[in-house]
Amino acid sequence: MEENDKKKKSSKETIVPDGGWGWMVVLASFLIHFIMDGITYSMGQTFLEPMRTKLALDRASISTIFSILPAVTLGAGPIATVLTNMYGRREIDELCFY
Image 1 (cartoon, helix red, strand yellow):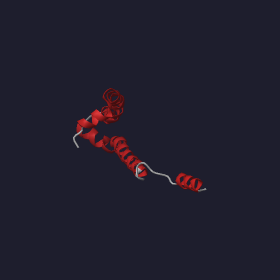
Image 2 (cartoon, rainbow, N blue to C red):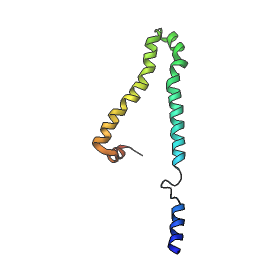
Image 3 (cartoon, rainbow, N blue to C red):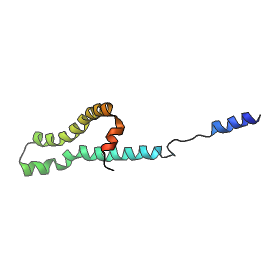
Image 4 (tube, rainbow, N blue to C red):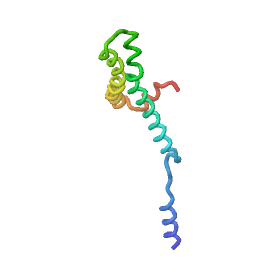
């Protein structure tokens, strides 16, 4: 009977591998993406008219400037994937200075 009691107790206890900080990481990631995407995609609305008057350019030229940031960000994803698959994550971490 004692073995059955031990099995019942151990099956009820859940060991969290990250120490319970997983949801904080999810929240922080959400906030970072929410804020950065909000800034990135609202730049055109905020600075379009002041840049049109200062630079004397048409709307399409100014919008092209604001399209480059998301294009570079999303275009870097496949490049980062290839480099990570070639060299692995550990070698990339060694290049970072922290």
